[in-house]
Amino acid sequence: MTRVLAITNQKGGVGKTTTTVNLAAGLAGANKRVLLVDLDPQGNATMGSGIEKRMLKETVYHVLLGLSTAANVRVRSESGGYDVLPANRDLAGAEVELVELEHRETRMKQALETFVAQYDFVLIDCPPALNMLTVNALVCADAVMIPMQCEYYALEGLSDLVNTIRRVRQHLNPKLEIEGLLRTMFDPRNTLAQNVSEQLQQHFGDKVYRTVIPRNIRLAEAPSYGVPAVSLDAACKGSQAYVALAWELITRGGAAAVAATAV
Ligand code: ATP
Ligand code: MG
Image (spheres, rainbow, N blue to C red):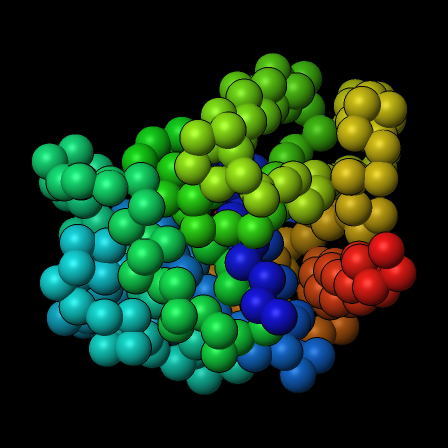
């Protein structure tokens, strides 16, 4: 069964793209068939997967607007071992153009409905906004993964995101759930980070992933090589954390499947 995850947080720079790219590579390393969908006009996940965003004739923008198909737009990340629906700045126009169209919230879902069946995991990298692109990702997804830095304002933004998820669940995608909250760029020596981390666990219980992503310079360097850190330097702490996250996801899915057959 395909699992479609939207990696989202409207706060900028919290590690969404780093998570999407390295989790994709981690899952691919565990022999899972993975599709990464870049839904951010910044195209960072595209570049971080080793795909030159300026050279693309067609991107996820064309898929969203019905001008091309996912199969036509798909490219391979050789360095990551997964497929990509890439993005570049063309996608910035989609927000405005979608407003004119019918079923604008469900375009992505319609475009990918049968296509995603070839994959075990589909990871959608969202832009730092609760806009129509993010809504399209939420409508398409089975669940949401929320990367967050454990800092003072982190919890404030979270309530807006949780409300948006609730609204999408009510009106557009009843099966949408929060898969988990991921603590990123974590520095255990920082007392505030520890406090926020504890608050998260109190509020969200086992929705908080056991795996914590440490602050690690290799994760920040890897995009400049167009290679996921997990593929570039499997031994560094950041890569190890993302591989652990991939296994947490795989085994969690397994546990859920067992639970579902038991009832
Ligand atoms: P945006 O909202 O702009 O899309 P984002 O949420 O996708 O940002 P990233 O681009 O993944 O965030 O990360 C922001 C910056 O922090 C990048 O320069 C990235 O390389 C760096 N970074 C991400 N995770 C880590 C980490 N665990 N350790 C060190 N640096 C990191
Ligand atoms: Mg990003």
